Length: 427
Ligand SMILES: Nc1nc2c(ncn2[C@@H]2O[C@H](COP(=O)(O)OP(=O)(O)OP(=O)(O)O)[C@@H](O)[C@H]2O)c(=O)[nH]1
Image (tube, rainbow, N blue to C red; front, top):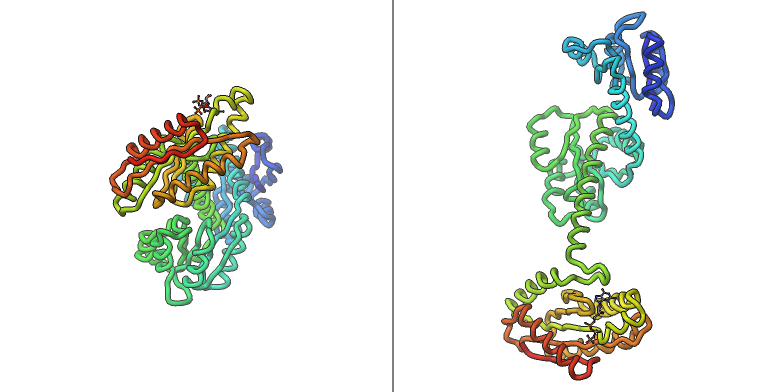
């Protein structure tokens, strides 16, 4: 960040240097307005300006900076001995960004530090921007500005061509001009994006652009779901600042959404096996069974328990026991079809709800699962399981509780009659 200090007093130059010591390179100082004008031939990112200079008033220098198209958007921080309402108004009118007291330079330093941090963050941008603009020179200007802050840009001249790619790619932001080539306007494109509830870019921030100072159109764009508006011709700094704010906000929203999803998953899954936990099983199985009953689809429920699991823990330790549990679970997962529900409901007890599988097919499934676990030798050990299987015999009136009770009773019989077997029972 290049900071230019236009400051007559040597004392304040030293003070400012000390306060801005965190900058990667120290400020460049000049002590007159005339020298300040010359210094602006080099790239400058921020100006610190003293109110009274040997060859004139700082505010006149500020006005001159604002009048020049090349320097118009450089922030100007004015240093004054006393800050009052009159000075603040006159400074704002002259184009000063903010006024700071010479005796509270730490406030100015905080401002500069925040700006530096946001520039750093801007450099770390990645991802794609969608640009829909029919003027090629404007599109080039925007593309270059966005690429400078790390965004890759896909540019289109019509809404129709942009819509095609919106189905296949995810964007961090879209910049959409109002008037475009083709049938659809920018307004129509905004409406399409927001209206597509399945679309992967439905929540993408949209910055609308137009050369028209048409308030009604601007309001309509915002109503249709554009998040911000930029009038043309545009300043690169304004464009970049708006894009940066929108992308950052979207990122925060995405992060909190991902966190919410993570917490939701944690709440419903068993950490060791990745299967659903008992709490979530009750909820989802009840829903699936009610749905199946409504559509007269048969369901079956298996309760599976590892035989003599305590012995594995006792002889080989808890870690070996955990490996057996995890490998048994992955056997269960692999055996299930989409739509089936598998859960770990207790220490070494698992439940599988089969949708649209009953009778002989359910019994076959249970037997295959039993044999699969035995032959897979979880954790390299001789492991067998007992399985209780329950179904409602085509009445379509069972509940999770009634199925579970029956399957648990069947499991008890399987254990009693020698383990390593399947016992079936009706509800
Ligand atoms: N390693 C491990 N062990 C667990 C976990 N949860 C429960 N257990 C153990 O699982 C064992 C269950 O033992 P029991 O209920 O007596 O049943 P079993 O030894 O499998 O005997 P049967 O079911 O009658 O064949 C106990 O030793 C529990 O400490 C776990 O998350 N990890």
